[in-house]
Length: 347
Length: 289
Image (cartoon, rainbow over all chains, first blue to last red; front, side, top):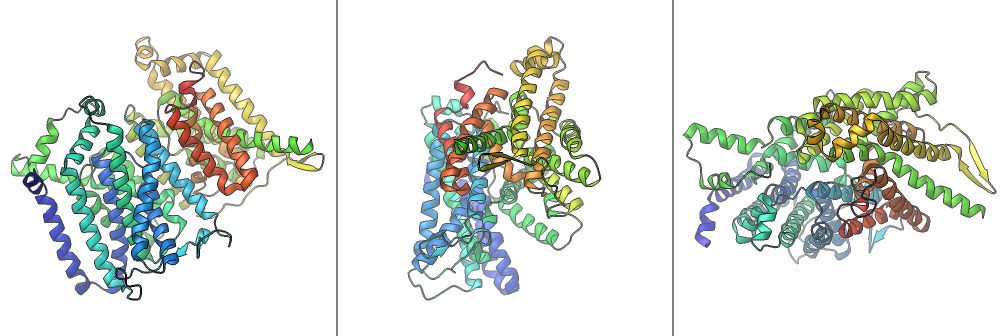
């Protein structure tokens, strides 16, 4: 079984290797400003990865993945200010966010809410967090020593070495941490997809009734992968707070929620590397668009989303993979062949 | 006594407000099983129609009650023809496509009118005094309009030919189609009507809230929760959802300020969905419209 997983994960290791090379090469080639920007993009890529895992792989249409991302960032920041160090703050952020997701997921999955409602509910949670935190600008809204700051947000304490609160990391070192976190999260997600747990999740995505008739409790598996996804999103949030240096209610905005969905749609549902690549590509596209005023950011992203839903519903990565395979003469790799065997009766 | 009346009217206004912003969404969702994520932007377009035309010299009542629903209704029909009809039966894709539409509309309006508040208009009608308390006459007017609107939708669904065809299509689209009803046209009209009602709501709220390209986001959370908690039947669902959530929101706002009103509303809805996954009308009033 373990050898089987190792074989399945070969492409993932190849991508991870490329990531490691990039991680050590980039700081020597790129300017510090670019590196700091890249850290933010990496944080967003972790967010995209978490949605790719639970939507693309688990089939859970979560429109509010930014809620977990933003909660992670906020909990990290508030805990960091209160604890005076980042080690426990990071752990608290991931744990509390997962706990929140588990509680929310319990109501959703055990209520057997359908997938479309699920999307709307998670989106609503995000929007209400947005308007809740925006209103916390008064001095009475504080958690421990940290003021919530309302619309202006809170500035985040930098990461420090584990259990050594005086050695803060420099931006370049934060980049290494972020890149390492992305690679580890990616490998973790790829491994999870190939474990027994991941396979049951895929079975539930393909046909929930059949999986339940085979004796699997779909609710528990969905709750499990949902919670894990939220934990990964929280890791992204922690990195984001470090990359940007402060966290504002804007992380919960409708625009960011839409952006996360767009990364996964454009990259391709069902792959993990596609959404990560799409995140980097669109991050630079939106940065470039921010520098001019002819085309509005919302407008461009709206068009991208509509075009992909109508014309390229599978996303870029699977489309490219198909094209490459067709040119090679149809030697389909194992993973795809197995997917074709499953009935498409849900579509 | 005066206090009770004043608080009662505030509560009623909260409920009417929820019903007003949700009705268009409920019509489209109930009839077509399409959750329109651009709902907030339809409200926003209604608001812009009123502000722009009033500033151009149109009477404010004409702008609110005629122009706003007309303009947004036409936009709705165009959207249905160009975008939604390709995606019937694919709920997830419709959600995503309407989300794209929502971003697109925000982008277009921002490009035309700028990102900040367009010049606002003040609510017509003065203040009504109840003893020592003052209540905005416009809020009372909105309560009345909401009641009339719900009544009009009920009459349309219950007693007109269009309503009959629409209800038939809603119950069994294939059977309706086999009996010679052009379901395609029914869907187009329904979407247009839902958009028109939404535009009217957006227009009516514009004097109170002002307009911004991104104002839709402040409405949609509440509208979605109301419709989902209400369930599939259009009128009973909207009414039940609005009364329950509007009541809870009002009580919590009264007790602890507006910050936690929305949170209480959300928590109620989530617990409610654990108990009744298909909304209130999935369990009670199932035969209602």
